[in-house]
Image (cartoon, rainbow, N blue to C red; front, top):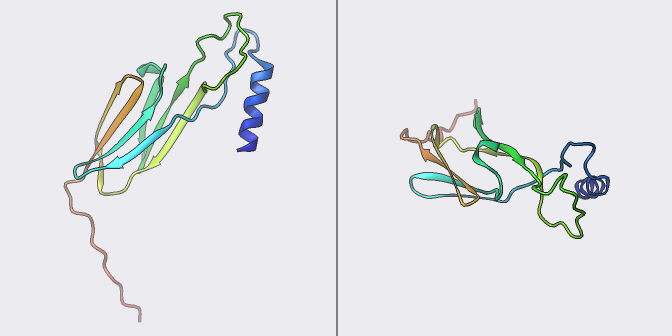
Length: 133
């Protein structure tokens, strides 16, 4: 945590280099919950366009990444106080096997990315006790 704050402060003080944006690391808030039919993931990313977000599945891991850009970069402003985060983001979530990674729905509305992963129609595997000889 300290290292991340140090990087943010140094990045803020150094500002943009040339015409490049000042890139930090952004950790969007998310909620994960389930109901009887699906796993729901809601990610708050206001100011991000849907085409700047990538959602992928690798194995049993759901990966959400993208970029939240500072709209004032290279506009001749100097921040007095900065509480909103900007920069690249990446969130990875392990998805339990009871959910079918072939049945995913993603929608973007009012700065919230809502992802639904539907439950598998296959019954979860039962636990089988193995006898030790």
